[in-house]
Length: 205
Image (cartoon, rainbow, N blue to C red):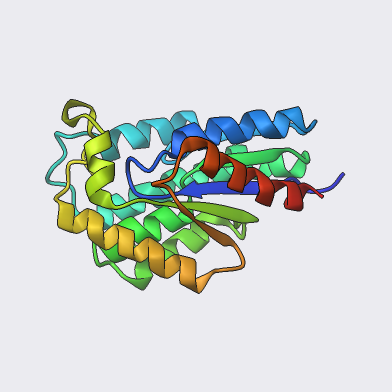
């Protein structure tokens, strides 16, 4: 049995990842493949509890390194419990955010630098994405798409922080062009979906 594919979605808040993930899952199933849809932080019972701690708006005192380590802890559990077993079974895993998120949000946005990459390389245990779809959207537009009362602790951060994250994603796209597919998320849902499906058809052979 061949190893399954790990497909990750990245992008600033409000870039439309959820819609595209759902569409891709339906497309992959239609092609006759088994698809597992999951998210980070979360994906497991332990990970979801960590997610609640990280994103709680009341936790404004959270230290940046605490935040980074919590993300890595949730990811380690996720990889061990969900992602690696599914890939070993030949299933296609579609993950809403992964290691690139930590590098963008904590490494660049929080200015924690290389420490974030190092701790997350331990967390993923050699399990890296086969392809990453990076939905790029101006953070000012992204924030408008999310209702204030629905924003979590990170989404409520100032615009300067989200701009730093956006530029970090642009840099990651340049650093890993063979893996990261940069997509203009300001276009229509159908245009974005068609582009993603074209890349996946090539991967599935």
